[in-house]
Length: 108
Length: 120
Image (tube, rainbow over all chains, first blue to last red; front, side, top):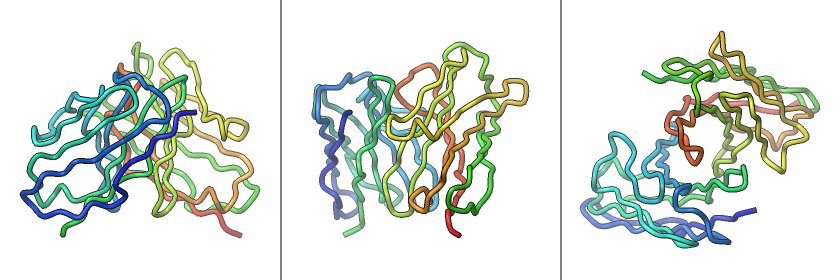
């Protein structure tokens, strides 16, 4: 079973700053099946990035994803007030889906 | 416009069976490549995938929960049903259904979720 470890657990930044969120897999995964979601309180997750680096429909270009193998990164180039939320990475493999434990992005 | 909506009981007792229904619109689960999954989230915790059903009726379950889960679909009603047996307080969570559209790796549309509490 693939385990995803996200770091940091909490990231405190100010609007306008750059955010870098990490997701590490316990074994090599296919980049085609690595996704990132944003979740705000009381809401369902929202797909941001799929295939490790492709933005979902309607996602601003300040969000970008990169990585391969076991190490993946979500970058938010310039934080807007609405970007403060919890972010999850997720992978599909061997007919199973796994989520990371999440990174909370909070306003500093 | 793709929408999904989860319905089911808000409260179940320990040992009971939970039945949840996902009613969707904007796509057909008879279209090649379409799939619907159930995912849950305990309060304050991370997301956990439960099950998936495909357009061709193939079914997949979380390894850790597969003995307790059954997923089915009614294509004519645009519904997917999940049953979970032997409910326990640790199963208290918000349960979401979500669509996979062509790429098996991620869900592009989600329902708003339905909270379920397991308590006597």
